[in-house]
Image (cartoon, rainbow, N blue to C red):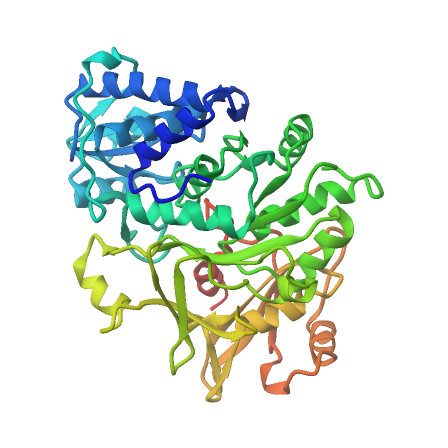
Length: 481
């Protein structure tokens, strides 16, 4: 492994020097680590002709392709400050980010969308130039905040999260260590590279020196065919990805759809234990699920050697270089090299960090044998007649019902109770469910009756975020309140 590098560009160069002929990306285009570095230098020269250099703030909204990752590397070579925008952002979100960051340059797959924001920016296209014309490589300070990642907020403007080369590299190193990635692995990226998980994964590839299949979007059947073609050993993304692969497997039971796969991994949303056990039984591999967020790209991760019950019911132990504590009110708090130094809006920092420097995740949890169990979210706890109820607990139990494909438990306003417990269920195809059957199923698990849902809503499909497929509970609350 290549460890201890403080600069993204230095890591790219070191990997290219160490294994120049090793393939880096597979799929629609194949490129080696050496070829990746060389093309990034040519693109950097082309971007420099537009006046982009060290400290220049550049926003980009680009698809998940080799060209995009090359552009990210080229901007790193120049020392530019990058503002990645997920491709589902439209005029409102893009305009807000451009105004807040003041980025004078934008690279975009859809220039007209950028123009419709009404923000005065220069739209440039990444083209190649002569690397001999490049300025000297800039000296990158360890605390220089060169990446701004925006969360896809649902009820307010997105929050800009500041990252350094060091925090991103720490995330890549932690991922490689936690998942025991090896040079002979073949990975996969089927989620947006503009999401914080994108650099996490690519930096892990650079640290270890293994290749990955790159997909612009996740279509389960296309992904399975591509993974089979290239003998992928590691796949995943989030619980929604696991469920999609399970659905494909169930169309041909008894024949492994991914015979070379050795594990699924991911995070971004809770994984019900029932999903873990289904993957283990039907796909034949463990799921090393974790817990992370834009502010802390790697927090916890299930590990090889953990018992199935630990992998199914916890988010694993802290990754290398991260410390965790559970505050008196049950909040999960962390600190370490991978933690963002703060937000673009300084007013948010006071609430996000404790006086002694710990980042407040806003999630509730407990440690069991050194592994994190996420029990809910501070703002997502249902308070029924003064009783705190964990939505996560009910979701995990409800997910074991054979008629339940997906479930979200939310609190809805109620004059008598303060809040009532509502289960929103997406049934398995061809099946249905009523409230008495769900209550009977939950009661059989031995939970107290105060936790049982008073209301059940059936939906054709859950509303989900555009990056890692999180269920958008705010939309469900709005719909059913």
